Every structure is written in C-alpha cells, then in structure tokens.
Amino acid sequence: MKLSQKNCQSCSGNVAALDEEEIKNLLLQLQNWQTTSDKKWIFKEFKFKDFAKTLDFVNVIGRVAENEGHLLILNLLVDIVKF
Image (cartoon, rainbow, N blue to C red; front, side, top):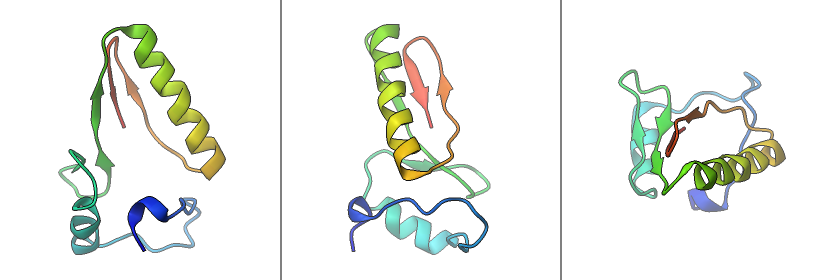
C-alpha cells in the first residue's frame, strides 16, 4: 500500500517506531521531506508568499491532523512552516 493511501496511527505507544531503513524507503514516496539528525522525525519546509497564506496552510494542516488523531509539531514563521 502506498504511503498516500494510509492513515495516521496515533502515537499511543502501541505501534512500534519505524526503523531507519523503513523510513528511508517511505521517504522515496515523498518529495523534499527529510529526517532529523537523530532519525526520529520527518519534516518538510513550506514557503509562502505572505503570512496570510502561511496561516491558511497551517489551518488546513491542523484540520487534517485533528481528523487523523495525529500529534505534530509545527514551526510557524512569517512565511515558512516546518513540520
């Protein structure tokens, strides 16, 4: 099954973390996503024209995360979002 067809499984502790090789293989299905240096998180940086567009994006991502029961960390700057 493709990554885009899967749903988030909550970080409940009942699901084992992916190992480095699994993460590497899944990242091949995504454009411009990276892993943190400790290989525990994936992230992507999104740049926007202005703060209003940045905030619109954050609100959309927030709704998706809420619907999926997904916990995430968003870094919001004036025209950049990294999560």
